[in-house]
Amino acid sequence: MRFLICAGDPSGDNYGALLIRALKAREPSLRVDAVGGAQMKRAAAQTGCEFLFDLAGLGITGFIEPLRRVPTLIRLHADLATLMRLERPDAAVCIDYYGFHRHVLAAAKGSGVPAFYYISPQVWATRPGRLRTIQRLVDRMLVIFPFEEKLYREAGVPVAWVGHPLLDMLPSPGAPMREGDRLRIGLLPGSRPSEIERHLPILLCAASIILQERPEAEFSVFATAQAPDAAYRDLIAQWMSSSRRRMRLVREADYAERAQLDFALTSSGTATVENALLGVPMVVFYRHSWPTYALARAMIRVKHIAMANILAGRDMVPELIQRDATPEKIARAALTMLADQRRLCALRKDLLSLRRKLGGPGATGRAADILLSEASRRREEVRA
Image (cartoon, rainbow, N blue to C red; front, side, top):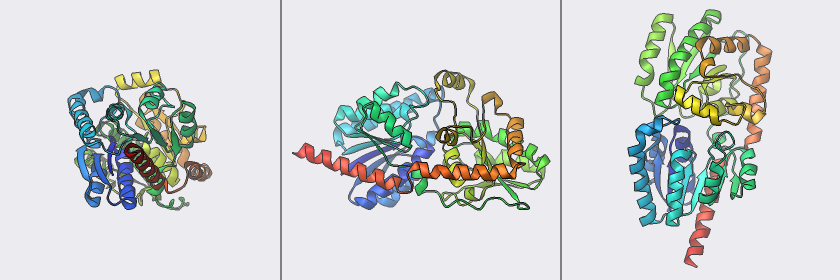
């Protein structure tokens, strides 16, 4: 059999790499053509698969920014449509990233290629009309949050809840902070170049404010595989020079250092789910470009942006968005939480309780089993 697997952002790239390995472990003869990022490229090389294009490395996000990449996206779509028309893979698997993948799914449908969507776009948060498009184009959804299964089933979309793949990647939570310990705070500005550019200066200023009241704090900036050291280096060097304090740039694939954090200042996104499942208390913030923010505000249908708050159905961690995402407000929210050890311990327990809501380990394997079974069944139907 032959699969096309496509991911467009860093988190999808991570999940796509896990999926490639799980599929090849179950079906060593499977051929995979992959579009994604650095992690999928590595997985493809290790498993004898073909890596076609680094889409995740483009760092495209929002509503306005993709317009700059339209020619590139058109060419990539044309190449994938040609591959599906001429080669007829047994499955096209798209991972999140709706804006581009709806066109890939349409090309698959037009070529008679079974189309699967692994990890749903956030149709429950904005633009519910996407459900109609997905219902028309997708043969089966594989979703990672339990509430998504009911949403798609009621919309008439074949769906399976497999659980969250992060539980296949994360280590056991670290020990909680004790009185007298050093205070380890992580700064997570986001994964895309535009997020790092907007958010890192804010986080560094917030760190300086926190140091004034908590001089024992030690800070680390967590980098992503897609962003080079140069995206962080100069700003971190300036901060260390002015504060006369050390700050580490951390790159890791196993979350070992993240699991040991006592607190985090975190850009909204997958990192908030990672922190929650590691039991790391946090302040969540985000700044868009103003045109993107204006469009997003007009469409958002949910109260919260942090998945920990969405899953809990309440304000579990603070959220500071756009004009509220200032160094002063972020630092003050963090200091207020850090001053209450009892509150931090309770929050840590609440965050860790979310693990039970996400299906337990093995999500990637369950997704791989469904994809191979569905593709095999459809292949036999065509032969018959």
